[in-house]
Image (cartoon, rainbow, N blue to C red; front, side, top):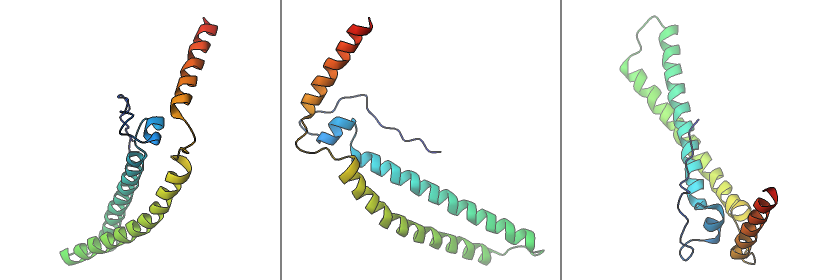
Length: 132
């Protein structure tokens, strides 16, 4: 399984970043891009596996050696399948991206992050004092 790595060591400059980036600690677009790249990698791996499996099936079911033309045709058709899968994925991924932007990574304008961060820090300080 591919690893998704987010760089969150440095605090973003609050003047140039969105509320969402400040809240989550990373740009939502970066997360979405990385998810898309992982899905695309899986599609490529699946197409490679399919092509190799079909080549093995052709060589094992036939006493004849598979010629270069057949191999080129198999590769071309596997690539065509991959393109179709990507088109379908792109269309649906666009919908997924819109959903994430509206429902997951959206912080309404009326929410004051500075107030939330201040109260969160105060609660953590109070909890540490009570646990001592």
